[in-house]
Image (cartoon, rainbow, N blue to C red; front, side):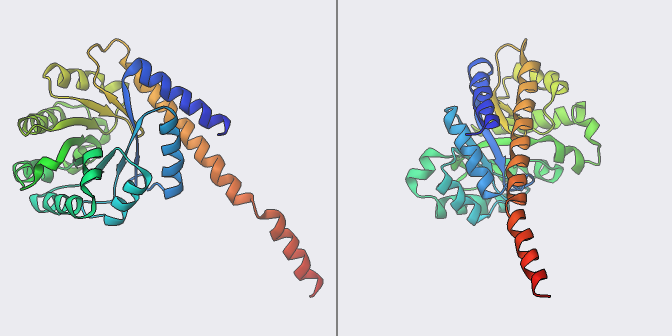
Length: 263
């Protein structure tokens, strides 16, 4: 491991010990992670003894599901599930492409992240076989955008009321709840309110999943450290691809020289 990766492992261990971090997270969807990046991040999570969640490309992204099994993900999330039909396709894919033992080990979930998904939530949660889907995550950035609001409105009362309603319906259906999207220090009051209603099990930044704390006195520090982890990861990623970009420079120059000799 390089120096940045060692720092990431130590930071994860600290966050796990002091702030209730349970998983590292990555995406084939909006983040567009490459398979080698996912495997490198999985190694870092393993060294900190943490699980890893993968958001796949869609409700029926079968190749992504195969990759999740191959790499050994502890959680798998389908994004943009906006209808009962989309949920039924995801349930069918899980049952068809994950062996029984894999279904026991992986926590399957969906993102409810648009107003359309919110309006169709009853149908989504009422699908046959829904028991296999254990987690509901609200993605606030896309939810806000789907309502024609700006990113600055992510913590507003309207988004809070929608989120609270989604989680109440999820809890009635015995689902684990997670809040995502724009989790920064400004989101602390939003999270605290949901926690006070006993509606929130976890919250997540782009890369880190936290168990909702009983006390919030150090939560801002936790969010800052999660952002620090993401920064380290992006710096490490940049260095990795930078080395690849430059690795053939000497041979390219040598070949150009050889070609010139025969002109």
